Length: 241
Image (cartoon, rainbow, N blue to C red; front, side, top):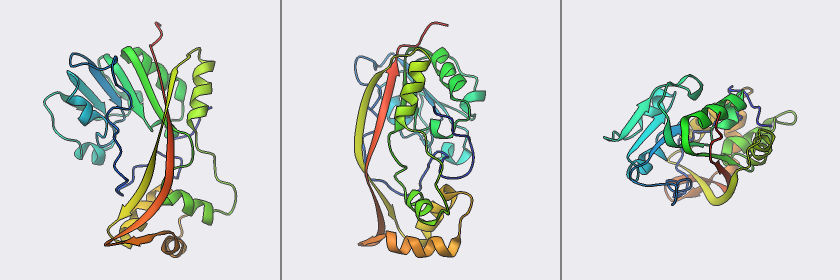
């Protein structure tokens, strides 16, 4: 089951300041027949608007729910984009045709009411994306190298799928894969990016020594190649409650 808690450490939702290889993320959910210029959408804990902003150009209205002030500050200001400063569990938001949630459930303590609220807020379709595999970030490898024992297992898409089945939901499923390359302008930027995602037990000198062996110089940048990331998307028509 997806039962991770909201806490510091690698189980929290990763929000890297590094620049991953560009990936078309705006259409992973809402390709026809689900999207049209007359439909509305809620992006649950939308981050910096990676999905909400491009989808706003294809929909009548988008509501982005995001608790982080720093993430909200990075979101574009659009006439048809409403930004709500709240965690999803506490948000008061009108229903929309579509409700999406991308890479959020890793840090949700109680997943069932979280998903049920998504269903209540969706008139036509619910979409949830979750990674099937390790976090594509150097902090994940640092934890593996420096931890004194086994690390907590991070929830995966397969866990979400089994939970949905237990809830009586049989979703349609799609998998996407894409390379992830973290790029940094300086070594200090790489350290600063890894530190908050590493969580408890961070050893500054040890992490710096390990990162020196992990990063590769590419012109003016330092690069960490996370390899191929695989994510699953579950989507379904909301049940009537």
